[in-house]
Image (cartoon, rainbow, N blue to C red; front, side, top):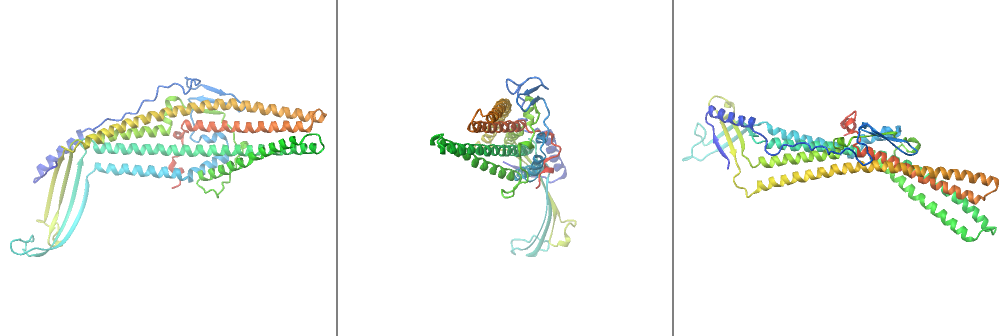
Length: 503
């Protein structure tokens, strides 16, 4: 129960004030002190990854690439694709994307809550003036006014000061928790930034792939149509049965059926790029991406495994959430300990406003209080246990995020190698089909094969070209995924996001 006592002399007030200030200075914050988790003792992402920093591993394929371990990822990693149109689109997206603006506003809001909580460190000061007109009963009840009149005015002006001494660090732990949450929001903002830039690059690559696939599919339709026309003429002359015409017509229908789906995907990619840049779908973006505009990064820097927990914004956000949960455990512990308060008020009271603050009208009060919970039905104890369980939950979530981060990097590294193998196979198949087509054209000139055989060779080449486009898109897309999995170099940004994002 609170125990309040009035201090009637200045020496007693100074003694209590000195006691509480000494307690504040010598007190320690309740609960556990947070320590950052140690980075996992992992030397490599996969069994094929080198353990030595600075090692460069070539990735086989028609588009040569080198994985450089312990390399530094640039803050604007997308410039490694050497596409000015892509750079312009990303810059516009960073300025206008509403998700990034939302993350920036959320960070500002969270930081203001930190500043608000830090205000508890200081005394609260308030001033008031209360004029009143009163009438009191005559007879047994006397007037408060010196004149003894039953009807009088009363003017009261006073200044109030109150202070809660943070002896056991409850307020410090609360500020620590809020600051950790603000830091977590900062890393979540970085994650939104990374996701935005990665999505723009991936969407541009997908658009380039779709345009190339549409061009190949249209060429295939032309080839199959010419083949059908030839078979139709042969059927009319009685050289082939009708079944050949029907079979070829079915092949033409299948080739044409691919185009609507590709055009639909291309339209959706354009809508996606418009949305990422903060536009509505009807506001088409000026950039149109082709594979010829993009260049596969020749060197892909890969952070050391020991640095991944520092570079991944989702891991850093999980770490700060763990920090906040640790501080909340301290808040719950401090709630079970005594709370110290000081309050003082002083002012002037008179029946005439002109007499305020004159000698004889002043008053003051100084109060000190200590509150110690005695019985609350176990409420504070169970809140403390709940906070400790929440800390264990945040610790498990952090470990899960770290494991997922390493898995993400390992998956993309392996995907890059398999993409290179697949691209090499597709490239070989396309070259072989092109060579076969050249031979067929030469044989047709010599009269060794029919025109129908030439069209079949052209159809095979177009199908191989389509597979090559798809394999090339996978190689580009997984390169983007690797940059994203490694954190995207946000720590190397030249400018802060506040200078990029339009409010």
